[in-house]
Image 1: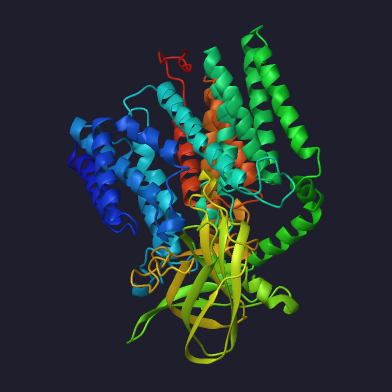
Image 2: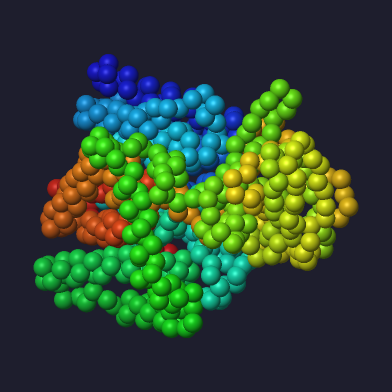
Length: 638
């Protein structure tokens, strides 16, 4: 290889390894374990590079523990990607693999770095924090990660980079995505079995699985389901073993259950549309090829009947989904108003051309006069005596008669142990320049919706430091079942609009004991263990439209570039499909479904799912039938 072809993989491998070790050693809960696992996976992926590429979609839905770590800017999934990058580019050096189209690759990489740099141009030293909120300049890095991972993984996911045929590389990716969806199905069943119940379809509850980044709203689960749904059809058609087909059929019904319990109109519409497109493409292929075999065999017809019956049972009763469907017109009017607020951020020709900056939407939206009010926020504060946390109350109101309800939608939270049969005691030191009302709770909940709480309102006068302590009111929790593991959540809210409350020396105990159930209760480890929790009101953090999200943050230039990329990939897929590559149909369906869902949700503000979308696009680019290549493989039989 030329010196440049040696230097680039070397620098990427070395920087990925160094960054991974740095991030792992800073893990707030288990730094030693995280470091050992990172090194172990790096060595494993050096030995078997394709395992690394397979592991990314496989573990993507599970690798995030933000409610326990407090991390907002990075997560455990980033460590996995860094291990794959370090090993993959090291392997390139070892075998002498030549990185094709080096100039184009470096241009893409420079573009992503420039987008992040422009978004974070006002970054200050105080903002360099693993726990920075989404309204800080570091949010540009959080969103830019998915773009960076996609570009850096591009050479590794190329069939030549995997030392595999195009069809083998594609089927491996499909299989990893399908197996990764098992995490989602199991997590949703675990979530709903705890609350509100597996067969309760009337309680207003939207599932999130293990996509903890939905703690302030968003559609990470929605986007994941839409991308993966067509691949279940691929798995069904590729499976020849009757035993595997029976197991897959049961899994498909569980996957449909997950889709239905999102109670998302966009999810159902996008998946239905993508599957209709897929059916049309598969039918066209059979007609064009003159095949007499029907598209649907008896097993497929039975599967389709069972899925239709499941959908009818859920939607045909008085469910939360029916209420959402009935409110569609009213909700769309609210969306239009929210979109207008976002477009209003583009005030100059430069804004329209280049955008306000990657990751700037939350901070700009909440600071604009016409933007949605924040229900709360928090930040660390250091003075000569001690480090404290400042919790801010709502900076506006939805209903002047219910300010305290608005403030109660936002809380500083931490995962704690649920103690069976006991009431909790809580004490805190507080200082505020005005009289304030606060709310302290310990709830049994997965993420967004509490099943049961103990709580107490705190009334405090203005002035210096005050000490408050009391038992929380409410029924004791009944624990012991496996569903309750990790479901205890401590929440602290400021209910008074415009109030900033300093807090210190938090103590939570149960049953008269002295053991403090809270970690980092004096904030000596910055924000470790603390996590913002929001309920029902998510407007300040999302624009709920993929295209507006790109337009507002990267301008017409960014939107044009994105749409051009999609057009080129779709054109390439259509050409490949017309030339006889059947796997292109599944990429077309998944991408079309996500693009349709993007009319109603944001995608790029959910880094893990945005990375998955990027992987779909780069694998779709490499999806082509080459002369003499092997035909699309089938899943193994038993």
